[in-house]
Length: 46
Image 1 (tube, helix red, strand yellow):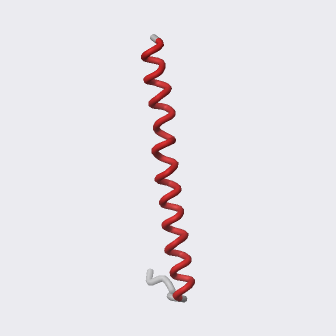
Image 2 (cartoon, one colour):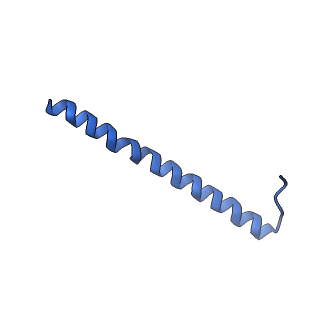
């Protein structure tokens, strides 16, 4: 039972550890694009 519990805990812990860096990278990329647009003073072409 202890081995199965370790697998369950490992799976629960590994999921946020994989998701959070992806969210952080997405936010950083969005911020970089925003700063570049403000720096170039180019309006968004929606």
